[in-house]
Image (cartoon, rainbow, N blue to C red; front, side):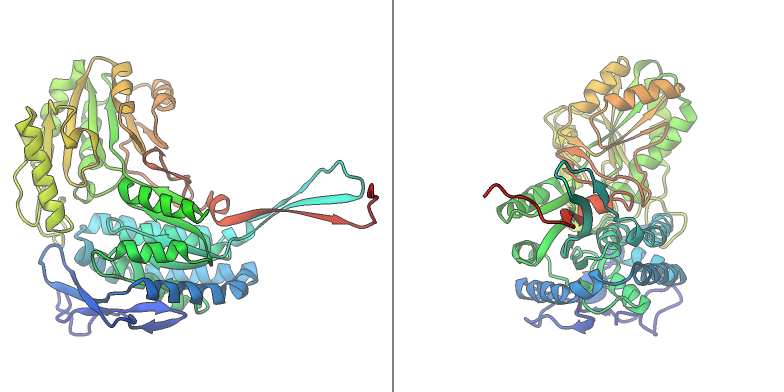
Length: 500
């Protein structure tokens, strides 16, 4: 098991690294190759865990275990599945302080965002406890005399779940909970940056809740080995569905692999999310909403506002207030409850932020605040006049960097927002609710929030994007559409006449 070290200090930081192993067929196991890698605390740089470095053969072993467990779990009574999910919700809630501490140490998020993840995940488990009773079918009318036709939903089999690090508890949770509730078995591959909070923590919770062995399997891998492990999962004949949350380039490659094997995949990918601030918006509220939407979890949320379009009549004052508030956000130790912007996940992420901001400035962008790395942090950074050819302008930049742009009117704002090849989420701030709803309909995004910033999610909502932000939808209210097979079954109570 991967429990906190009993020699932990008063600050909650273990004196020795934790140990993270695979969880396959209900057992904690070492990788077949025997390798490990260090999982680093992004704030201190210290090793917080020693992690199993699995490979393709470990992935195939996990799928075999999931396949062996499938028939029994698919046939389990709805009440049995429900009891496991409710117990898991209670267990996770009871470990609240421990889990919040682990999230902070492993992914650098502050207490606020760690608490958001914990609350969401507990709610996810409790809402999903109703799913075993919702995968219902229907009786269909038939024109063939004596035929009774049924449309029946059944579990698909083994689901491969590939989750990222940035909201490790939530995004791994939503990748596995719906499929499990519907009678499937799962192999979870968490990010190498969050193998504990995005992986084996879920295995611990579910095992203690009474989930049968093999229903949830977790395999971890070292940096650089994700592709081989993912390919092994997708190509295994027993895997019938895949879900992935992460970058568009990786999602495209996985979709191509899944396509070769004729397997369905749910993709939630990158976002270059717009926030429209119209002239009739409440200015103080708009500033508060925009700062939160741009800089929560140091901008490392797929839903964060990356581009803010402000109507000209309020643009100057909004820019002044927004920049002042962004510049004043506390930066530093994520363990300090006063900190808003903590460390970015790793040195590579920090260097990418540096490079993209420097490129934009060299091409003529104006830097309003921030722009200089403070390792391991990057300060809240606001730019304007960013040329369209700069990477910041057209690609997702995962960090506390946002672009401000003045627009002539709402139509111009919609045009600029829709110019992106991405379409995950968007926000519209306006004094007119009906006007906001009209604009929401025109925005090319899978999710639009009127009079709120883009960072929003609830377990039962249809979460997903359009264009290069992916396809399919997460959410307990829509899980049956993604993770069950709809089958047509007919029944005859009397012989049928045949022509020959």
